[in-house]
Amino acid sequence: MSDHFDGKRFFNPHVSTDRSVADLLRWRRSRRPVPWPRYWQDEAPFTPVPVSGNDIAATYIGQATFLLQFSGLNVLTDPMFSLRASPVAWLGPKRVRDPAIALVDLPPIHLVLLSHNHYDHMDLPSLRSLCDRWRPLVVTGLGNGAYLAGKGLAGAIELDWWQSCNPRPDVRVTFVPAQHWSKRGLFDRRTMLWGGHMLETPAGRVYFAGDTGYPAHFHDIRRRLGEPDLALLPIGAYEPRWFMGPQHMNPDEAVQAHRDLGAHLSLAMHFATFPLADEAIDAPVLALAKARDRHGVPADRFQVPAFGTPVVC
Image 1 (cartoon, rainbow, N blue to C red):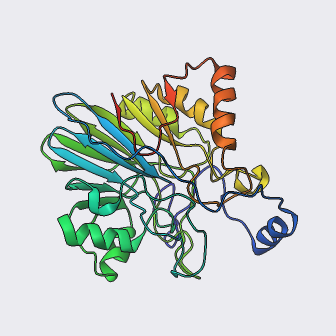
Image 2: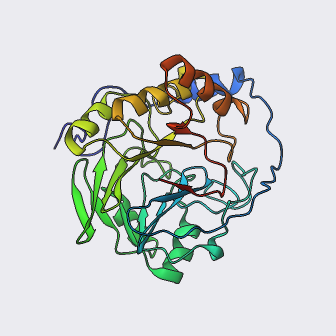
């Protein structure tokens, strides 16, 4: 028992993210999604950069997938390389742009940070391919490791909010709260825990938000774990607000989160990959620029990374 588990299901202590069937039908009936292109071609291929000393190189691959490179350590966040975010390969949200780095072109992966079990974040084909190649350590929330083990992917470390592990003696991962939910099947809503990660390395701290609405936990993360040198913050899949608001930040809230965290640099993610909500493909980036101006945040402090182009900090 805890402030986010009732003995059967996890929950958000301060707000409910549950949506009823009636809410879903209302959204489906009333939605006016802005059409996305069927395919978006990225022009700049991935070019590896040397990483040494105190450098952190972050390369946006798509959705919530980043390649984080440190000296002697390569990390993936929520690896998603499949064509569809769905339990089946022939139906469901289809990506409009290829992964900025093909899985076969990745450097050896040592660590995977897995935020929660939604299909656009926990992609079993991607995890199986990574396991076959390098057997990276997976760090995730309570219940997800047991689920993965049942799918033949044993060995993940499960953490509750604020619990930590040390994949290496000089590396610490803390699983931190997020305002979201979990579901893979018909009857498992909120039976596996969701969250973000704070990765502490000799090169600095990296905060990976996963999926989250805008709550007060950013202040708590800063107070308990310190200001991140790099924060990876979602900016997409936010319209309509009455439906998406509790579970997905909009760009203005992402800028507020950046300020709450005291992040030295933030990079946007969770945009322009899968059409999951009603906003246009370019709306999050345009809205982020306005939000930065509104809050007085310089563009170089909260950047929109180009797909496949490493940002070194």
